[in-house]
Length: 335
Image (cartoon, rainbow, N blue to C red; front, side, top):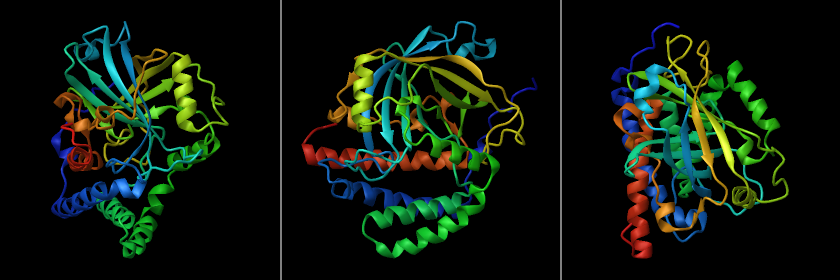
């Protein structure tokens, strides 16, 4: 294999227009979170994405015994403790039996002393439909405004969605949308989960894929997703392979083109995620609801790479700071 591309901070740099739009977007995120309890009709402030929690569980990451030598410095223990949150991508929490199949599998990795090593918010769709930072920020800002009853933003949403159409028409995007449509009724734990954007692994740049093992896709078809997931994790162990791809050249493994899959980079198994049965935590507990899975809180050599990824840093910070402030006022707790 050729030598991996080394991380360079230029992959993450925003231009001046993008920085200005990000500041506007951060204000709408704070406004959304401040009004989120009434938007979702709950008694706490929610996240401004993946607001609905299905479950929170304890897990373990078991490192592959024959992991490649170049990766061994990052996985110097036999196992690592995990906290895992299962969620839905919608901004508004709805008490419905069927949600759109846009699921989150967020993983928090701790060291032996309980210190944070890395956060990885994985999702069940491998691509992102927008490459333009400007288009994404304008769309996200308009959506936030729409939810807080600024109806005039509806036309801005439509305009930005129209601008997205070309990036939705790649072969990879169409194939994965058709695949998702065919799996729309499948059990949440039967999906593969992806990092979508790239991450650092030291000086290398990687993407992550989590592949569940031996999960029946028809599990819980007649139940609410939250109930089926809870019932499954109370009575079954869950295991998934953790795979990575390494960036060797920017043509086949682009950093800032998120609507295509990485080509010519084989998947390498680095370990397994294991959730033992009956490892569920109380998802309604305030400390669990306030968990942050901001990947930029990770150790520097595990952090995200790319311009769209960079936006998440500021968005996560504003969201969690506002959420914690509001929930402290609502519940009189210091969390």
